[in-house]
Structures are given as C-alpha cells and as structure tokens.
Length: 405
Image (tube, rainbow, N blue to C red):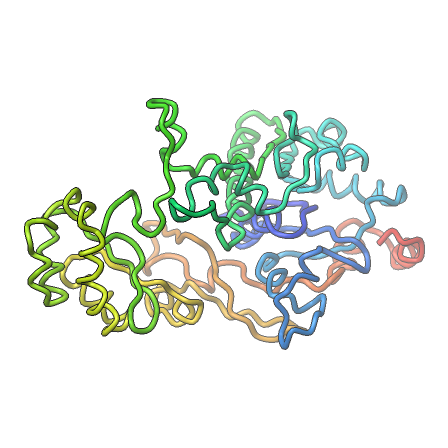
C-alpha cells in the first residue's frame, strides 16, 4: 500500500524503528542510517540465541527492522553533510527519535531540512515532545508509565502502583508516529507542503487512560486500581486453573445462569449472584465456589467450553500459545524470514489485513507484506551510495577511511 514511498530512517531502539517497520512492511523503501561499526543500539539488546551477543542476531533488532536497507553514516562527521543532503532530496519522509536538540546540533532541524526539501514530512519521536517544560528531561519506560498516568490505575487497590511488563509506550508511540506521518503525507499530497510531526511517548500513555481523566474532570473523583477484579466486578478477570490462568467474564447479567451450567455448580444460580452488584457484594464466596472447578480444568478446555455457551472467556496465552495458535496461523499472521547470519526466524507480519473488492482470497497474508530479512550493518552502502547516489568506489573507500561511512 505504500509502494513508492521513500523513507529516511534515523531511528534507533524501539519507538522509531517500529514506526518505520510498519512503513517498510507495506513496501515503502526505508533506508536506515546507522552509526559506522556500532549500528542501532537495539543490536546489542537481544535476546540472542544461546545468550551470546551478536550485532546481527538480536531478536529485537531483527523484528523491528524487517524490510529495510541499512547504510552507515557518521552524522557527527562534517564530511557526511553532502551525503545527507542527497538523501534528504531523495526522501519523502524522515523519521528520527533522538533527544530534542540533537537534530539541531547535527544541522538537521526541521527548518534546515525543509530548506533542502520543502515537501518532506519529518517525524520526531521523543519522551516528552519537542516543546514544553519537560522537553529535555530523560526517561525510561518506568518513568513514562508513572508520568503518563497509566501506573496510577494499574495494580491491586491495597498495593503500590505497577508498571506493565512490555514496552507498551514505545510501540504505542511508534503507531502514533506512523499514523501522524500518513496524515502529514496526505496533507503534502494535497498541498505540496511538508510538515513536522511531533510525537511524545508520554502522551500516548495519557491517551489510553480509559475514562480516568474524564471521570476526574466531570466528578472530581479518581479512578481506583481494581487489580484482577476489573472495574470492581466479581467473577471478572484472570483466575488460576490447572495449567495457567483463564479469563472469566461474568456478563452481561442475562448470561450469568450459563456460568452455573458451565461449571456444574448449582449454587452459582443463587439470586445473590444474579446481578453485578450482588456478585460484587459476595465476591469472596463466589471465588470460593468457582476456584475448585477452575483448578480441575485446563485453560484451553475452559475457554472452548465457555465460548460455545456464549460466554466471553479467554485464557492467558504464553508465547508458545501465540506461536501455535491456529487462528493466527489461519490468518497468515506469521511469516518465515531467512536471515543470512541469524538463520530462519518467524516474525509477526502486520496488525491488520487489507483486501480490495477484486481480491479472491481473504486479504493479505504473510507473503504479501514486505518481510525481507532485517539488514546487516551497512549491508546496502554500495547499493545506496554508488547505485543510487552516484558515488564512486574510490570515493566510498576514502570516506570509509575518514570514518564518514
């Protein structure tokens, strides 16, 4: 869907590379600029096969950079400026996630970039955005969860707030950068004018607080942490079972009698449990009735039996469950990617499928997205610098000796 789009990728680690991965998977031509000899920091993060670090075998880097081309360029070396100017003239989009001020010090702030290519869309991703009093503050994932407000509503009510385990803020900000870039491109296509898209990672978290902010604005009351009894409901949330955890969803009220039938526990049909308020008032007794049955059954069995009765149960899926899930397999969600150093790997493709009215199948599968292997460091120097920009082999050798590429 993005074939023909030219993207200059100055990103590293997670948020920026995820935004450009979404572009590359849709066949945008993404040239990733990395530091000579070092590359994207995620190359050193892993996980690695057998726990042996290797810059070409990081699972994180390989996932985030499928479908891209890699060139090396030392942006701090003044001799890199002519090369960067040519790349800017080539590009439709530039994506970067340096700390605010770094691009200006490199001579690549939006004003100077736009002077080279007025139609360019430049997208900047940072912890707190390009403006505001926190602009230059540092943060890690735990800081962003705290300052973004999500930590306040996560955890048990009688315990300290909790951070979520995944890099949710980074991937969410990457999605925001992707959608913001596409919006700016639409504006560019209509007006001919480029834009600077400013994405703050902390603002992504503040936008997914459910109704916590509006609740406080309207009523002055704070959204409380509810732990596994989501929204203060009983029989609602993850419960232990024989081989893990299963998600029990007791609702709507007219479905409650099916719970007694599912578990074969007549006491669950008692009028005290018939509505949400009654279940909440008798939550401990309700749990005591359900837990023995849950502990005697496996999560997949509970899930399938409940779903067949119209109960919206789920189960807590471990990675092996996801990789073996026949539903995702049936939708072509995974693609086998062969890397020259790391070997064969399976990657998720994209978080959506697309289909036109002329398609005969069910839309895109793993073979339709651009899932070529993540590049080795500087793999495409010759292809880009010689084949695309016109530098000679001798010029590249000289620039390599100067530490430019």
